[in-house]
Image 1 (cartoon, rainbow, N blue to C red):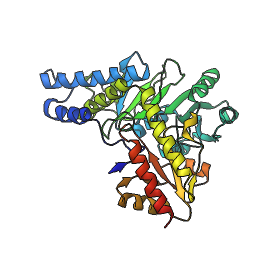
Image 2 (image 1 turned 120 degrees about the horizontal axis):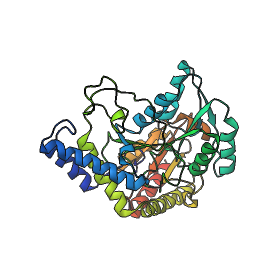
Image 3 (image 1 turned 90 degrees about the vertical axis):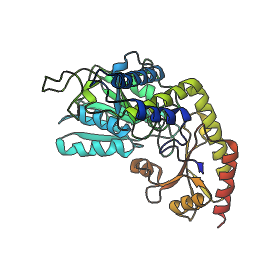
Image 4 (image 1 turned 60 degrees about the horizontal axis):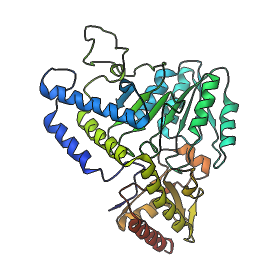
Length: 379
């Protein structure tokens, strides 16, 4: 199988990730609850993963790195744990449902939201669109680092600087960029960084990360056993205990730790360059196929993550994906859980076919993909 569905989850996983999961399943027990060797081993693995994530995101305090089930859980923790009745929040026009749905649900509780239009290729206008929506009740801006559908990157460093000037909290969804783009929380005014562990970090599915880079900590959505302060009926306020109730996904975190080490060893600069080269070749090849519709500029201009969406004229995107699957190629078609992005780009009614490469893809696979798309386009 030629796999170009890395925007959903990366595949294959590095062997060290698979081995780490297996090791944890056979050698670890519940961390922080007991003093025996298996429990201590689990705690050590979890702490090492926090430390390596701290290296990746330039965070000194590993305790501010919270493990979640996925990026969606991290985003919900920030959104529902921070916004209260009367608050106003601004999101971008490219947001995933992991942001749109929890924000929309809070309308019933008196929280209002506005959508800032992202202008492709014009960061100045995009920032201006955010700025114009700020009012006296605006508490937070939430935006994706890069669209999971079209790869369009937002100027998060400049948006963060604007938030700091206005005294607004800033939350970034880095599900499509963590492990690919260089993200330094020391050099960017991000209060909350949310990401998936199973995409560009090459960890197992069922892993996510929330990095808190602010003195303003959200309320915890879940309360329960943390292995600490057990005599107190109140949820601990200390991090990371405040957000990690119940038995953690030790095997998943063990795999994530090796995935992060895999990224650190290769470096985000190398990964980004390699994946963008493949994506640029993919884009140029699709642009030369007569009936193919593309929706962005070339990803090689630096304003895009390595994500491409396209359609073939007069063909349903799902049919295109099925035909690719019959030729042993995996992609995703449809709305990609991001109706705002499709509405913004005029593809809400038809969706798109999405192709996302990883470090495990190569030029020969790109060439085969292009040949198959060319044949499909002539049907």
